[in-house]
Image (tube, rainbow, N blue to C red):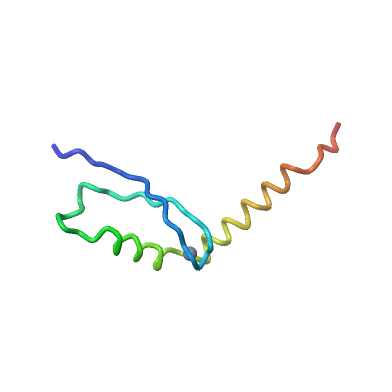
Length: 72
Ligand SMILES: [Zn+2]
């Protein structure tokens, strides 16, 4: 039985100007595989729009958390 090795790799996207984590199954990577190219392709092909929307949403949540509690 082959062990599945998941590795979280932090990638930087210049389009989103942000880093994001990508899970990669390393045991499926063949010998001599150009992991850098593969990861660069992932950065290029990831959903920039969805990522930026999620980031904006997270910022809204953060800002909300910083607001003073008016219920007290
Ligand atoms: Zn992006």
